[in-house]
Amino acid sequence: MLWKTISLAASFGFGALLFLLAAVRGQKLWVEYREMFTETARVNMADVFLFVDPARLFLYNMIALAVVPTLVLLATWNLLAAVASAALVLVVPRIVYRRLHRRRLHRFERLLPDALAMIASSLRAGASLTLALEGLVKEMPAPINQEFELFLREQRLGLGFDIAIRHMEERMPLTEFQLVVSALRISREIGGNLTEIMDSLATTLRTKAMMEGKIVALTAQGRMQGMVMAGLPLFLGALLYHMEPEHMAKLFTTETGWMVLGVIAVMETLGFLAIKKITTIDV
Image (cartoon, rainbow, N blue to C red; front, side):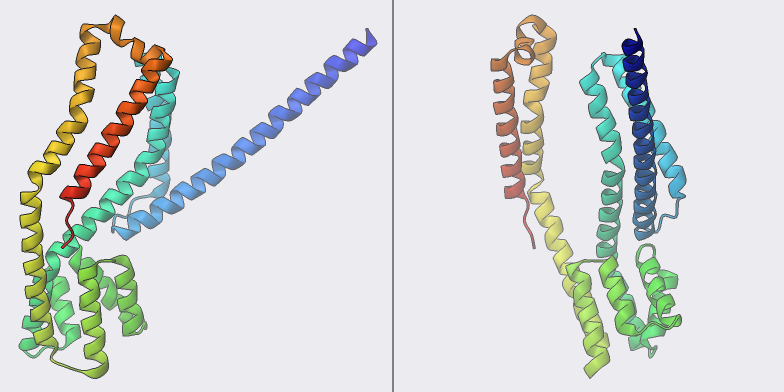
């Protein structure tokens, strides 16, 4: 009897210790994840000039992480689907950050020819490069004015021209903008007619944008075919499952069905990637 009591007490103590260690470790992971999320959100939001409280974004993410899997579980009674939805909630913020940054780069690239033409006009009128950039900040929309305003502000705070322009180049990693940076550096070091250079770059970038627009229009049908090809089997599968659920259920409940689904997924992915590769043309 005494031995059983000692064993029970030891088991209870060991279990309590494991629970305590798990709680401490879980709290540490929670703190680390919160710090990582808020820091990543702060940096990514600052990159796109959206100044949102990272703590509030973390709170929204936690609410979504708790609500979405619960709703999916109540709607489907499928634990795997609930876990997948939780993983999706964790990935969505990074996808949103990348999409916002990509949109910002695209808008900057689209406005860059007009900005260069405005700089050339100001230089032709006798203004210095700094005055031309200040006028650009006042007249152009975001993100052009935001980036050049930050460039001028860094110079006012004492940073050199090369350092400030390198920071701007790091924020806007575009081939077109690298040409502009090279032109500014060359003009600053060895001189030259900066007005003609800006005009020439503006004309070149406009021509490039027109060519890219034509390519996008000509390849639109191919891209649509890729999306239809990828979505049509899924639509037919859902339709057949609705019409013949008993026969279609074998795809999800037997090893042969899983193998067929794997082959379908691989072939669908390869076909979509092949069409995307064909219709993606770099200028």
